Structures are given as structure tokens and as C-alpha cells.
Amino acid sequence: MKKPTTREIIILIITLVLAAFFIAYQYVIKPMNEGSMDFNDRLRVDTEKFNKVRRLVDQKSLVEARYQSLVNLIGVVGSEEAQMPAIVSKIEAAARESNIHIANIQPQKSITQKEVRFLAVELEIDGQWLDIVQFLYSLQQQPNFYFINELDLNKYSDTTNSLRGRIIVSRMCLINP
Image 1: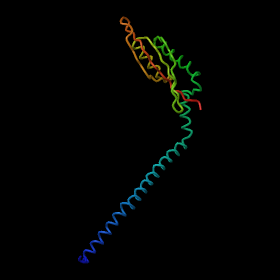
Image 2 (image 1 turned 60 degrees about the vertical axis):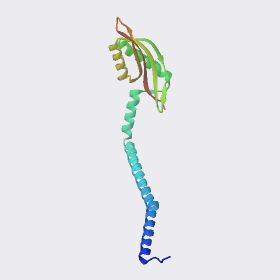
Image 3 (image 1 turned 90 degrees about the horizontal axis):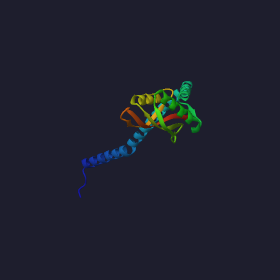
Image 4 (image 1 turned 30 degrees about the vertical axis):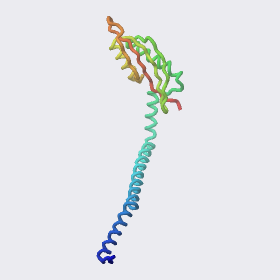
């Protein structure tokens, strides 16, 4: 075997040094840079969240006033039994104003999500198309704020053009803490 020349030894050393730099960069320097970028990004996001929360705390009275207006608008419910008669009477009043006949009204199972409860009622109604639309509109406006969950209308009479339908309406109430 022939002895390597000085030029070949220099090329081998340069190749080994470049390979060592490449390995060091890929497995040491690059992950450290990415980790510091992730840390800086997380720090920036956490700082933004902190500043947002601090602004909310600074506006505490405004937030409490908005919450109180929401409580006044929606209402706080202590129990479902206490709220259901008021819901039924408001629905019946809206039906009378709209010339709608309620054939049947049945409370449904309520749905609770976090601090909000949805109290639902199933209605069977008879009436003219325009009266039904007026009824649905009045249910969804202030101060009622009912949601129409389901609506099924069928033709009831050919001579009077009246419709019969089934409607499930619900009302959102805040749960008393």
C-alpha cells in the first residue's frame, strides 16, 4: 500500500472537519436554535395572553356591567320547575297575539352546558302561514329570546289554507351559582 500524499491527507482532514461540523450543526446547534425559537414563541404568546387578561381585569366594572345586563336580559334560573310556568305563559301570550291555536304543549328535558341551561317546550299548533311566521318572530324577539330548535309544518285544511305543525322551542337561562 502506498503512503498517502500530503494533498490527500489535507483533503481527508478537510472532509472529516466538514463532516464533524455538519453532524454538530444537525444534531446540536439546529435543535438548540429551534428550542430557543419555540421558547421565544411560547413566551410571546403567554405575554399576549397575560396582557389580554390584564386589560380585562382593568375593565372589571365594564365586564361586570355587561354580565349584569346579560343576567337581566336572559334571566337566572334556580330550578327548572320554577321557570317552566313562566316560559309556557309567555308562549301562550305570543300565540294569542298571533292568532295561533296551541293544540298541545309539553315541556321537554332541559340541556345543561357549563353555566347555561336550555329549557325546551314542544308545541303542536294550528294556524295560517302569516300568523305562524308572526308567532315565530315574536318568540325570537325581546324579551322572549326563544330558539326554534325544530319546525315541522303540514297542510291541515284545503278550504281554509291552515297549517298544523310541531315546533320545539327553547329558552336559554343562566344557572344560579
